[in-house]
Amino acid sequence: VAAAALAHVAWGLPTNLRISLAVNLGLSVLGYMATSSIVATLGPTFVKANLRGIDLNKETTKRDANGVLVRPIEGIPIPESQGTVTAAVYILVLSVFIPFAFASYELDRFPHAEMAEYLAAVLTITFASFMGFADDVIDLRWRYKIPIPFLATLPLLSVYYANGNHTGVMVPNQLRWLFGDFVELGFGFYLFLLWLAVFSTHAINIYAGVNGLEVGQSVVIAASVLVLNIVQLFRIPEEFKEYRESHVQSIFLMVPFLAVSLSLLRLNWFPAKVFVGDTYCYFAGMTFAVVSIVGHFSKTMVLFLIPQLLNFLYSCPQLFPFIGIPCPRHRMPNFNASDGTVCNSFAEFNPDDLKPLGKLIFVVLKSLRLVRVCSGPDGKVQMSNLTLINFVLYVFGPCREDVLCCRLLAIQVLSSLLCFSLRFGLASYLFDVVL
Image (cartoon, rainbow, N blue to C red; front, side, top):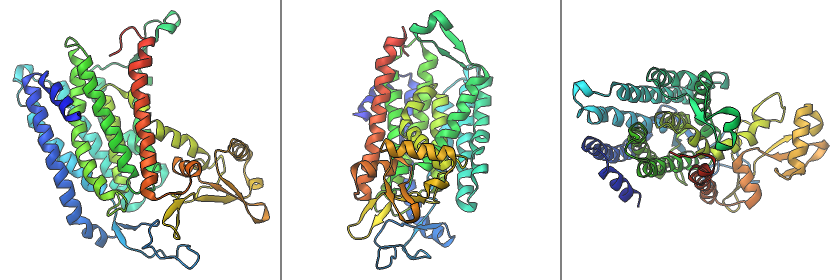
């Protein structure tokens, strides 16, 4: 259905864009095959270079008679940081595609602004991917991780500013008597785009710990973006050429991403043959930020990231030291060796030792039954770690890891459906014209 819709949309585009889209699809297929082949070939090389990990939630990982992991961890080494291969193939595909995207234009009508924006997008994604690989290799601290997306996004935002793109928002009909039809945000809009780049990059990174989840959520978001682009090209009239071309540019960036991510997902799905590493999280998060900026749907992208936003907000009491709730190094689910299922992981602490804000949040979470709390000796308690993964396990109970991943991806799909209902349903009641 998606292929037929894309073909129908392509038929209504100018001839040069139809050719470009056909080449883009062909290169994406090559990218899928190249990713599969290179990951399979270079896996042992990554292991030899000590870029490897051990899947803690598998029966092959050594445990004692009580099912507790034996330290140091012993198990089957799995190639880590395979997002590096995925990002490299994607960047190469975009680089090869450049002549086909712009070669058909005459010099006197050459779209310099669009080309500059495209090149800035590739540069931004490349920079973010490189820093993700650096994080995999030297394990950067969060004080260095946080500003990286700020720096990576600057080339694209500079081109966005130079091209004179919009930095304001339309005001809903119900509030126009107070604010007018349009509010110019100026520098505030660039701060919002910077926040989106930082959030999307790190939100995928902290919403992880299950085979297939990092890539799976990215595939769902990418497919949702592609559906949005196709729907918009159906809806937006021909006279709004700028808006239509921005969605075509988004398709050019998103189709290759979806292809290489599907290839990686096949290898990262339960039981994982490879790990994606922080590189893929940086790469995927920045790609979504870039596409939303190029395609001019940054506010819609925030709606696509609702599960990531909920996971971040739910995790805040453990992520920020000033709140004081302990945060283990790994918050992934625990493994039941007896039946092969995964269950809640816990943080252990004494509520009396928490800071005042931490005590308040703990009482609220416990009272509203948003966490599993088990009493221990000496006044200590065990509280399920504050991640959306653990919350789903708390609500639905232990299950196999692939079942858990499917449940989490179902939440991601429901989020996309909610986004479309708000974007094309509710918005029609708030605005006279919805593009």
